[in-house]
Amino acid sequence: MSSIVNAMPYPAMLLNSKSQIVKANDAAEALFERSLNDIYLVRVLRHPEALAMVSEAIQDNQMNSGRVALTFQTQRTYEVTVAPAGEPLSDLYLMTLADISAEIQAERARSTFVANVSHELRSPLTSLIGMVETLRGPARDDQAAQDRFLALMHDETQRMSRIVMDLLSLSKFEAQEHIVPSDRVDILEVITRTTSALEASDPDYPGRIKIECDDPIAPIRGDADLLIEVFQNLLENALRYSPPNSAIDVKISRRQSKRSGAQRGIQISVQDYGDGIEGAHIPRLTERFYRVDKGRSRQMGGTGLGLAIVKHIINRHRGRMVIDSELGKGTCVTVYLVPYTS
Ligand SMILES: Nc1ncnc2c1ncn2[C@@H]1O[C@H](COP(=O)(O)OP(=O)(O)OP(=O)(O)O)[C@@H](O)[C@H]1O
Ligand SMILES: [Mg+2]
Image 1 (tube, rainbow, N blue to C red):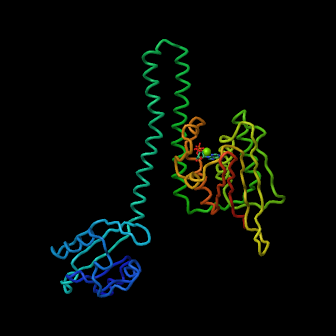
Image 2: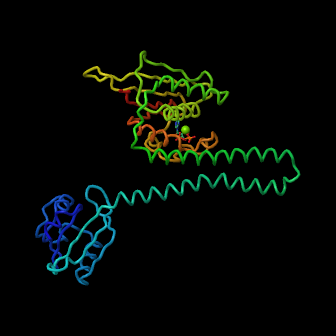
Image 3: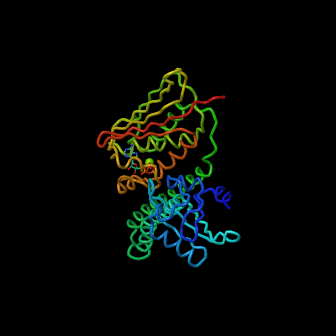
């Protein structure tokens, strides 16, 4: 029995019918940060519910289990199970504590995510329903109103379709996160192409993006299409969240190891001189649907999925992204990428 307790992958101990610990494994001793042999459980576990669960199991000679929140360094949730050890140790009870905090966290994230998706799709749907009703009723014979409503309906359906497409690419990236893209990519070309495409998309954009690049610049390891998506999002954010004529400075530079001078990677920074972002929001920007100013982002056609996608793509490239921002001054997003090696 003692070797079974030791072989358990999570904290486990054998108790006698007086709730005294007869044998505890290393994981249990690590959890309680002390040696546990011969100690009464109540001395190390001061949690009334958990203790009640143990006494009940002993009294009824039956398995008992439940979730309890225990605080050691941080608060974590454990699934505590107490069960009679059975013959030939019929006077002993096996108690295990499985840490299920990660599962609970994942459960919570999943339900928040579903709530967010539903909410994001519900508002365009509600306005579509309203407009259809208007077109069938009051605006039935009003050509001008019909044109106006159809244009609005077009925008709302576009928006819904963009949300669904972004969600699909996110789930695709999640599934492929362990595959590291390994093509040879010319990062200056990626950025120049992205810039031209963006400039063609809005009359306010041409001439604002200024690109500076170290010469020569080594190729990087990656996937050009995915990287185009990254810089399209970053440059679009920079253009969107800054005044109409302000510049966007893009710098592509080498990173050298301080000691050996060897090439360590490439860094690309996208600096804008716009609204900036309050510090408290920065760590949350890569969460799905997170927007600092929902109204403003929505009005600009944003769904709050852009940076979530960017983060996934960069993780897949085994790169890094750092966001620096000062409210009212501007934002600088720096992406670090790995050089190509044949
Ligand atoms: N350069 C920036 N300056 C100021 N705020 C920014 C900047 N980049 C991002 N943000 C803030 O971060 C939020 C999240 O950005 P993200 O790109 O994920 O979503 P979005 O731009 O709102 O929509 P999407 O990119 O999906 O069209 C934005 O709504 C905006 O509030
Ligand atoms: Mg964006």
